[in-house]
Length: 432
Image (cartoon, rainbow, N blue to C red; front, side, top):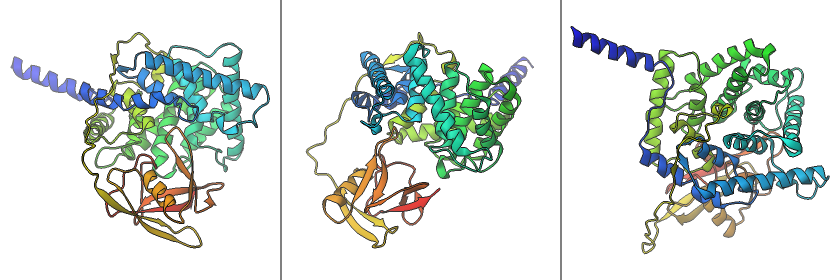
């Protein structure tokens, strides 16, 4: 009878654990191999390539990059301080592309908190003021009747609120109210495969606001909105276990791990998502630094909300560069990819030959070098994205979508997607 009682006690404990979103310990070698993929990105110190998310991801992980990590933060500070000085001196026209976007500025504030710093002093106040101006502009674009859209996205809008909250900087109730309305009314955050990311980031902002109590008059709406966010994310789980898709799952898990309303459904969904993520790690699915930096905190059972009270003394394993296995003596296999553009007056279709393992960006470069194909890109923290094809620019609420024929949108960007032999890739101009 004693053994039976112990068994029931154990099963009861497991059932209780299954009601919260808890990511149990993951194989340390898998985590280290994932972290090693960030090291080459930390050598790219131009403003175009500096990514505060890389620093945040490492600081919230069980890994560290030693002296390289400190140098990276120093480079971030220099870059953003110089940008502030340019803005203050009125030289905004000198190099408009060098000014950080709202999302970049918000992530930089997250990086400071990851180093246990609060923004302060004149330069810090300028950072805060600039981010608040961004949010006010976005609020104006949404409009008093909520029929408009942010100039950027609700993802960046949420990230801006989260960044200010982590630094204990209050934003006006009307700014928070726009995000609350978007979550309360179905449809505002539904932007193709990015919807789970946007909803999750909104939830992280609400979690911070709830814990910090910076907008007490909105507290009840914030609590209800958090419940809606959790519900939306759980409904978006695929049969494989991902929330939305494999790349939106880490941010979704960050949000679900902050949940204060445990349910059996929540615990089961997170266990299933963890299994799906581990399978993806085995297949080296995560290559993009932005995605890796969002996943590393999850594998360390952390989220961006932990930056309210970051633990800067927690022990972390020092990463060593991965050992390269050279196979240069082998002649690379050649694959054939068909490139198609139908959103122009004279449709373009061409078969392009590239070495196996080439990125979609390599395919576009090869096409441009050997034919009438032309394209333009712009750098972002998630990698380059298409701005023009065959001289046709994406304007207003248009964008160039990447699809695998006939109609499968690619989840990865130009630099990350590796086409297979015989695939047809279409570049299609669409509106959102």
